[in-house]
Length: 259
Image: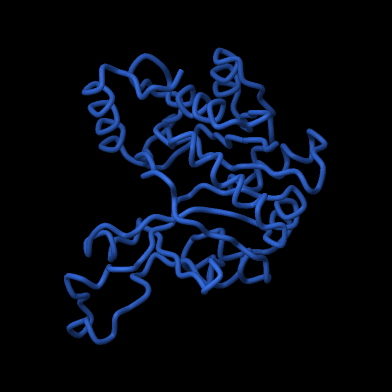
């Protein structure tokens, strides 16, 4: 059995209040909660510091934990929720981002099972092949490099691994993205690892890349990575992303199959 926590905040630099904005016939948060419920999770919890989000979760019939306003990351917010709910150290918790309304429920189950299958791992996450040279150099597309056993070596916004012989100077060649992996921001944690990570100070690489998972690697925590069984959904960071999802759902009659 695993649990899903959806960390949700109202403030967003590019799209304030985005988790409450309508997509089709319901707020974005309701789509995410529906995904969590359909994933096979034994418990679904929204963790927030905003009363408007708590009220939205209540309308969907989803449990909500009010957390501190001082958290700088979703991991910190989930750690507080796990501690307040008294979950056991070995329990598995999936962090499902509140701006992932089209995340396939199967991927939530997959990442939880991945951690269950590797008891030596602290964290599990997923990746998908980089689709193009343009995506390869996009700093918003986080890349990950693995060792031979499927453990994360490094995450970066830079194009990695770099094809030295296939690059003309500093410009990647048209096939330079072949074999590269794009990270999907979906994590499963053991509660003990989650609480430990929330207590660790940010590392140099994390501060430069603005990637929290680098904190775990810097402190010797093991992150297991697998290829996603399905393409991930579109996340929402900008008004253009939101309109893209609305148009996509409209083309399918306003539903993604979730309820």
